[in-house]
Length: 161
Image (tube, rainbow, N blue to C red):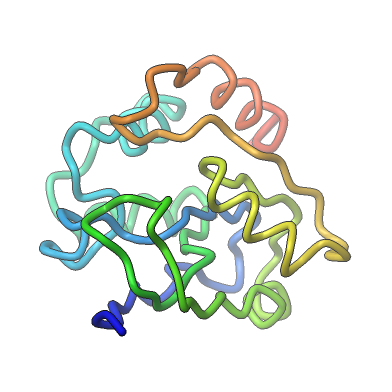
C-alpha cells in the first residue's frame, strides 16, 4: 500500500455562492500547500482574469480574492494514494463532505474542474440538489482547455454581480 497524501481544507465562508471543485492537489500545490500551485495551470489566470484582476502573488491574496468574489474552492478527493500529480493514479481515496459545505454557505452552483473530479463527483453525489457542470480542466496537461467556456459559465453565475 502506498503513502496516503492529504489535500487541503476548503476555502469558503457563509457568503460563498460558487464552489469550484478540483480533483486532488498536484505535487507543486502540495509543496506550497495551496490550490493550483503549478504556475502553468490556467486556473488562477482564468478566474482572476474573468473579474479583470491580476493573480495575487501569495496564498493569502488568493484566499482574499476567493472570499471577495464569493467563490469556494475545494477538491473532491481529500486524501488518497497518488503517483506524482496524475489523476489517473488516484486510488484508496476519501471524498469531500460537500453536503456539509453546502449547509454552511449559499452555494448554488458547482463548477467541476476536469474529468476525474467530475467522475468521482457523479458517483458520490449523483442526487445532489445543487446545479453542477463539468468544466475543461485547467491542468497544463489539458491541450483542449477553453477559457471561453469558463468565462461563459462564470458569466451565468455572476450576472449582475
